[in-house]
Length: 116
Picture (tube, one colour):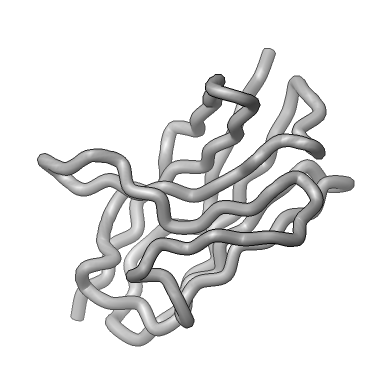
């Protein structure tokens, strides 16, 4: 059974930091693209950061550039999103994603709330 489980969300003040984690089970994801997406009410799911299976090349949404870092540990079957200098507009449900070709697997999401 393929399963992705996120953790690390919570309430944080503007300028604070959080680290999101995603653990994979049920498959070998070492060659698959992984990413973090976020979604706010009334909007579609937005790519925040992505990383290829090798753990090298990365891709970031404009709002994440310079503030967020994605990395992965294939031995531990985990991927992470380090979020620094959080802003109110970062408030969203964050989802872990694994992609192979056009097939996607998703976690259930973790809530990140940035508020004074």
